[in-house]
Image (cartoon, rainbow, N blue to C red; front, side, top):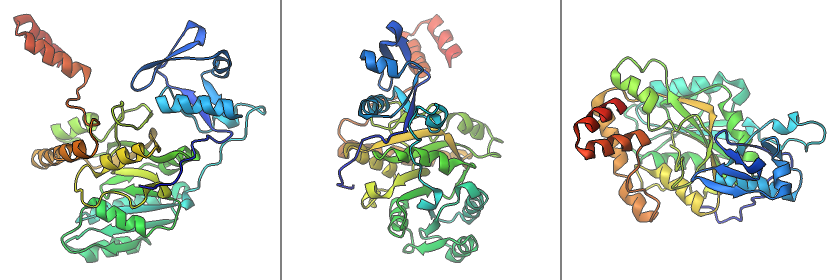
Length: 365
């Protein structure tokens, strides 16, 4: 992880807006919200700045207030708001260009998905990156991968036969980049138009090291009951609400299926020795180093979910093996149990062991 000093001063023109779920009490003097939930009392000057629920950074005081609200999840970046706020507002914070981004794609035996991904990238001229680097992680047909990458003008790197794992493959691609920002996309995703520019807006904050889009279901995978389930309950889909990313919060991690990162923050990148949970480990190491991270559902990347039971169960079991190494490396960050409120209600109702409680539990489920 990078040892550089993190500049957390928000630039002039950076705009934020209160989260839609925040409660304003006592005439706006108190805010209730964030993740985990908290109560914030505002000084009169801060209350005046937030009178409309939005804020544009124009001086050190507004920058400090905006940073506090962002870090607690009470507010989120609102790119473009400064431009609409009138001539008295600061100039909007400068946004990076897609030409400052390299896309790294690790792939193993998924040439069809690779072609689909590369086509989506080339068909989005507004988000065309400076370079695309395909890392073949030991595919059985390396010529097919090389041909697919070459046809799209991508640089193709070959890992050792048998593969080194996705973390090592991403690191190999990271080492070949020359741009300040790097996007990691798995070969089974398809980015939606505008995804890159939406994510880049967050990097106007110099303290943000990583931003992730929402991962939704790729059309055509809903034919089975499992496909329909994955469309609405996939573990990769972190929901419709934006959030800061930090351990033990509503969005404790983001999946490596799709990430945009600040290259200078990553150092050597992922832990190449990990075959699973390497994305969670990266996020938590960045957090421990003082970097900020964001989840931005306005940017979407579609994912080809597993829709057959055997590979789906195998993948879930594989995900589970990451809990132990995460708990050892990041003590206190892995929750012993996590469940939705309705799931907890069902468990409590069943534990009562009453006739009526079983019926209510069935209704809740």
